[in-house]
Image 1 (cartoon, rainbow, N blue to C red):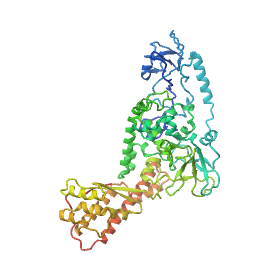
Image 2: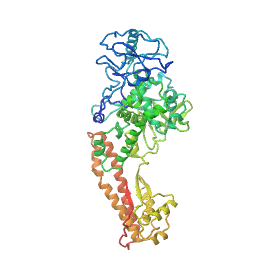
Image 3: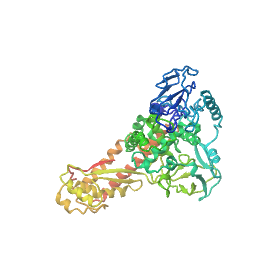
Length: 588
């Protein structure tokens, strides 16, 4: 896949979401040997030289194939041919270990994509002669390089147990200049509502149950350090290092091709540059949501090694370095984003199967907030029943859950302009310097409110949101203790349940000014967004960001109109607003 501008700015080559292919530096290791004095053979993949290596130093060794020089191994040099070392190879497994270094990453599509290093033998098996190992490896390389690269994901699934289905893969244009089309799932024939179009056997589904094997799930999750998504991402990264040897190679290759892009062919903003985020989301509260998610991913990355050691049996079959040495943060971030764009939350299954990666599922399926179709567990299958009729060639749509557009964009690079679950979150906080703070705090807590209370503003229900805020804001603006004692505070509000006319004036004025201020922080108006979105030559990232911001602005405008309408319902003979010196603190 081509390297994107974002990846280039982050110093990433290859542009693959699941990490680098083990082309330049591969490694394979064996299980624990019989005795503490046992050694593991180290073989140069360039010259075939074998040297004994103490198990205690496996993770600290380096080999430089460009200079064919051994470091801290047998202490001898080799230059192209066989080493003159007289050390004979003991009858144990062959271990060729090397760390992948930043800057050496290559893609699946590279010219050397069929190269794999080392031989993976059973413990205690007799090591073959150096020349035989190299020849066997070369033979395996030739077999792998002759694999039909045109095999698509669905064909691979059919060859591995996928029952006949009523869907197929088709190309979707990619709006970014110079990028190839991405795939999506379409109907292969005319369909009716209720048709079962896809049944994927669990043998083709990646779950934590598969990752952990026979080990209990609690071994990982009780550490409370690594999420299910991070665990799945780590699993696929290690599988990718196995290259074509991995059973999941066709699926991983498809994920790399998609690069976490959904039906708008745009990556999650988690992969955008900081400059793009600051420019395209200026004034939007979603910018802070993106920053928080990135910080969360960084924390998970920092705990990868801890979980590796605490859950020793996890990933035990992989002969590579510990996570943070095998993968730099940028690779983990890309893999995490790829997994979050395609993970399916299965209902009615045990915890080990709850989060699943389903080939031919998202992001190949399109999302619609009004769809009722979902991937569901059905015995040993994950199946999809459509909720509407389709003509052959039409994209299949599924429900993505009650997610607002900020999360749809974050997770899938997609904005649904008809999303009824869209919302903004306005927070009101009691002023801690208010002399009546403690008394107000006790009152709100009795009604299951908080000193920092969040109010959800749903799209199309802005007036209801304002009415919900009124009691809290009226209470927060009270300056007289006697009024506070007399105020019948309730969790839900009405226009009539007031403190005083001047108190209402203060509430309405503060809320109106706050909404006007927030609208003024956007760089563009709704009309300017309309023109940008209608421009077919505009940057796709800028377009999808403008769609989100346009929705936010419309919701804020509708909320401001609701405040003005409520103000008109108040008694006309208003007194001047009695602003509190310690007014509540509003944020969005």
